[in-house]
Structure formats: C-alpha cells, structure tokens
Amino acid sequence: MADPKEGMRPVVRFAPSPTGYLHVGGARTALFNFLFARHAGGTFILRIEDTDQKRYQAAALDEIFASLRWLGLDWDEGPEVGGPHGPYFQSQRTALYREHAERLLAAGVAYRCFCSEERLARLRQEQEQARMANGLGYDRRCRALPAAEIERLLAAGAPHVVRLKVPDGRTVAFHDLIRGDIAYASAELDDLVLLKSDGFPTYHLANVVDDRLMGVTHVLRGDEWIASTPKHILIYESFGWAPPVFAHMPVILAPDGGKLSKRRGAASVMDYQRAGFLPEALRNFLALLGWAPGDDREIMTLEEMARAFALERVQAKAAVFDETKLEWMNGVYLQARPEETLLADVRAAWRQAGLDDAALADEGYLKKVIGLFKERSKRVGDIAARSLYFFRDPGEYEEAAARKHFRPEALPLLDAVLERLAAQEPFRADALEALFRALAEEKGVGAGKLIHPVRLAVSGVSFGPGLFEMLEALGRDTVVRRLHRARAHVAARG
Ligand code: GLU
Image (cartoon, rainbow, N blue to C red; front, side):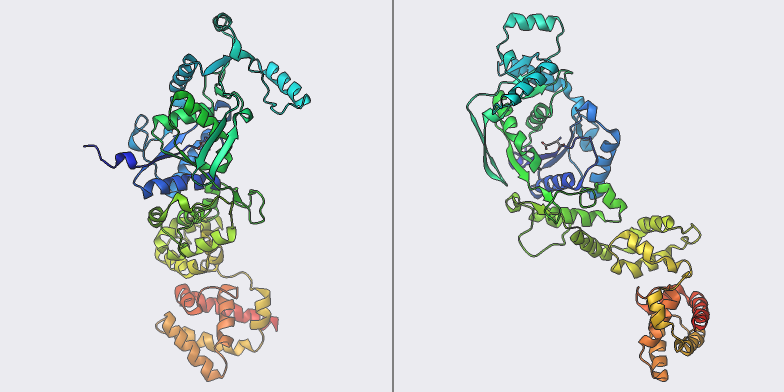
C-alpha cells in the first residue's frame, strides 16, 4: 500500500565526479544531504557523474566510496545497478541523455551547432578585442541553419554539439533556501551545450535529467555551483518540468579568510583518516561548517545531528575551517572510544614506528597502554608516538628535565625507591601511590621529589599518564631495570 506521506519525503543526492579525491567540501555536501534526508525519513541517492571521459580517474572513484563508507554516510538507492545499495553511474545512462536532447531538438528549443573549435576560438578572440559585453565566443549562427543544410551536414557526418536556445532578455530567478532570492539576466548565459560532439551529455544536461528522473526534490550543493543553477532552470523550463528546490552551501575558508590550502582543509577525507582522525570526529566537525543545531551542543552523534538538522539553520556566510577545533573534537571522541576499537589503528601506527610483532603480541597490554594515553591524545598517531617507552627502554632522557630531576641529591631517593619497589606486593597503582607518599613523608620531602625523577627514569620524558598507573602497567621487572639504568646515569652526570 502506498504510504500517504510518501509524497512529502524529500529525495536528495550527492553527485560527485570521480575526477579527484573527496575533499572536505565534498564530504560536507554529502553529509548535509545525508542529514537532510535522514531528518525527514527521505532518500539519499549517490550518483556518480562520470561522463567526462577525459578527467575520469578510477582511483578517485574507489576513494569516494571508501570515504563515504568511512564517514558512515550510507546511500539508499540505485535499483538498476547492483541492488538497493548500488549507486547510479551516469556513464551507464548516456542513451537517456541523448534521448532527452533529441526531445528538445524536436521541440525546437535546442539546436545542433556545427561550429568548429577553431571558429569558436576566433569568434571569442574577436569579441574580446571588440570588448563586447557578451564575449561568449559564438554568434548563434547555427540557430538559423536551414533544415536542408542541417540534413546535408548530418548526412556527411559533420561533428556537432547540441545547444540550448537561451531566450533573450529574460531574467532567470530562483529562490535559494540558504542564499535567498537570486536572479540572472539571460544575456549572461551562453547557448549552453547539452550534448557534446562525442555524444556524451554535459554536466548540465545529465544533472538535470537525472534529478528529474530520480525524483530529486532538493538540490543541496556547494556554493561553486550557483552560477549553473539559472542554466539548469532554463533546461527544466525547456522540458516543461518544475525545478526542484535549490540550496547552495556556504564556501569553506581557511582561518585567515583565504582559500583552503593543502595543509588546511583541502586534504582529502582519507588523508584525515591517515593522519589519525576518527570518522565520528570529522563528520561532527564537518556538520558544524555552516550549520548549528541552535543550542549549545557541539558534540553530537550522527543520529543527533540528523534529528536536529534543518536547512533554515544553515548560514549563507562563509564557514571557517578551524583545524584546532577539529583536533580538539578528535580528542573528545578519542577519549570516548573503547580501547578495543582503537587497537587496529594504533597497532598499525606502532608498527610504523618500528615495533615488531613480538612487541605487539599481548593484546591485553596494548589495550592497557591505549587506555593510559587516549585521554591525552588528539590523534590516533599520538597514542603510538608517545607510548613507545612501553615497549622499549628509553634511549635517552629529556635534557631539560634531567637537569632538574637528575641532580646528585636524587641518588639516595632513587635508591630508596628501588629498594621499596623491589619488595612491593601487590605491584598495583593504589599500593604504589601509598608507597610513594609514605616514603616521601619518611624522607621529609615533597612527593614530587620522588615522582619526577622516577617518571623521567622509566619513561625518558617529563610528561605522560599518571605515574602509578604507568608503573603498574610496565611491571616490576621493567621498572626496576630502568631505575637501575637511570641511577647509573645520574651517578655519571655527577
Ligand atoms: N558532479 C558535480 C560535482 O562534482 C555535481 C554538482 C551538483 O551537485 O549538481 O560536484
């Protein structure tokens, strides 16, 4: 039975071209479409716009899929390719676009243009020299070709494109849900190409035909497409179709107000994965690039974001990509993660840092180490980089800290600690803490006088997880061995 609400449910699509990797801008577009659809129980279509043969990259396609999956943005539709989860591929639909171009030709609202590239280039040059306001590079000559001439050229197999007849003196206006009312003069628009000479559609034709055939109700896309929208509206009109609702998302700028650069935000989604960011952190961060739930919340699950999402709350002004905030968010999510779920990634980072399989064999130990470090880390890689001394004795000691904590007067204290630790049972954080406190009192020194040199001795650095948890995790043998080494080092420093 048909669902009575069916007609009200939005249908949106993310329509990447596999000409490059998925960057944060594209990922945000995908995410907003996803949230908008999920919010209203609508449909989120993935459509691969792969009709530009020259710029097609198979590797980019794989990365787009991998990026969306990693971010948890599952798409809904694509029945004719691969079942309920298969995306649409425009390259498999080219007959449809040709058919639709033919329809416009038959209706007299499009025409075949036989102008050669050379002729168009020459016209463009002449127009520029003459400083014509409209230097579009053609003179619409082919609009007026007699039918017999067209027949002759077609019979001779003359290459040609199909262009839309853009009406003169028109204002093409539309209401953008984010940007408000927008109007273009048709004089600014060329007789845009619908079908290229190789028979493939242009982005404009394929995009409009598909949005129509797929029942897309809302086109949510990046700001950079706004100038295409009046062209699309003219194509809708030419077919006699009502256009969908448009919403163009704000550009994303670097904190200094400039464009995103490779180092700031222009990296691909998978670069962020490789750099140790968690998908839930990146997508939470991306959601806030131009949108806010309207209360104080910043940390939100995908479900919470979907529940709160509304296009009315997407701002028109540029969003700022603040990598410090992303790092902070990643730290928040890292803390919330069960150690188990970080194991594979951190293990890979440890391996990269040179640890071998034998060192990484004890999963229980690995999880304990991850647990000790995840709270102080911003990226997965930080956990690995900062915890190497859990697998090998420190090769050297941080010099500034050694000058402070490895003075000769530390020697008798290290000796006393060594003696007590060797006999301490059980070797557990709480008992170790009691031991240190008691010893400090006995010696009439602050606990820091023991804690700092011991930390430096066992880890080589002056910061890290709580000392007593750390000692427990390292175990007595390792702690005692390292204290002996440090003792020798302190004695040698003099
Ligand atoms: N294929 C276009 C892109 O690469 C789609 C733009 C649109 O959403 O209409 O972003």
